[in-house]
Image 1 (cartoon, rainbow, N blue to C red):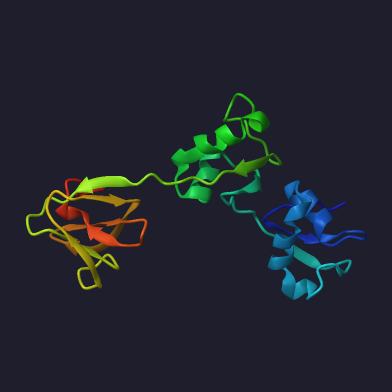
Image 2 (cartoon, one colour; image 1 turned 60 degrees about the vertical axis):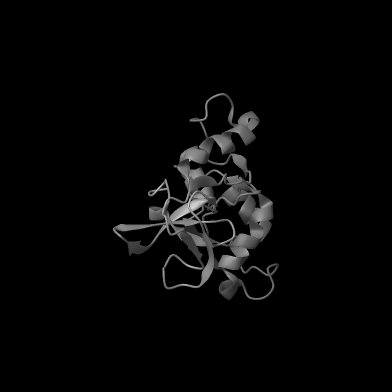
Length: 193
């Protein structure tokens, strides 16, 4: 009997349902909607009407913060954290939330394990305005974008990440705030973030 494997095709067998295929592929029957979404053109508008012989693509699940994720072959906590949060160093957050499932060694995760991927809050970084004329906060990482505010020297600003934008005086790095505003880091005491 054929096995449903994420990242490959699967031929529908007699008695299959999207839930049973999801259970095979992910160890979680509730993931049937992902298979349906990836194959709606093949299946049609009714997810309950599978035809024997239909060839379905079984998508690879992306780890989503706040949801369960089924470990795939080759996964590590670092690679899961990179895909879920954009930061491989957040692997400890996933491990701490799943210690009972994983056990004492975070390097021993196995395909088929179902892990909860917790939501994380990004702690903002801070910097101080050092440019004597003050620092402009803008709607995009460009000196030509809409001006939001200007802060005087000594003001502490918060940002959640660093993006590359317009190169000003040899520095293309801009702070990106939680509010979606940008400021040139070259005018602060943390010019590289």
